[in-house]
Length: 125
Image 1 (cartoon, rainbow, N blue to C red):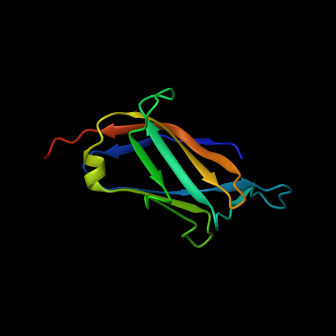
Image 2 (cartoon, rainbow, N blue to C red):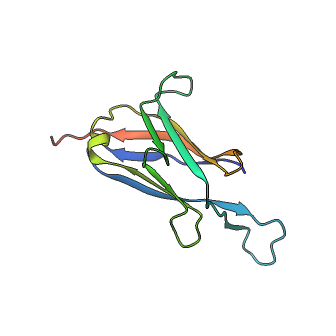
């Protein structure tokens, strides 16, 4: 699986929610459909945001373990629901970069998404 590129835009001090739908190429398509839902039942997900790719520390970590991500909650069971509370987003001040990885039940890790993470600073306090 090859990682897609997507930039996230978070407004500081607000709730941030996104659903990511993971699809895989169809080996032998019989229609114009080239992708199908990728079943994520039993998978874990994790995402870290850092100032730069080379930064030694992250300033935001979202995982299935810390409750910021829920995997396979939709009808096709191919989604990852991401959420950041308003209180957490209020503390974010810097733009950065991220990647989103999934871990299969057998331990195999795949990167599914990567890009920039922009924080729009709030004025109202």
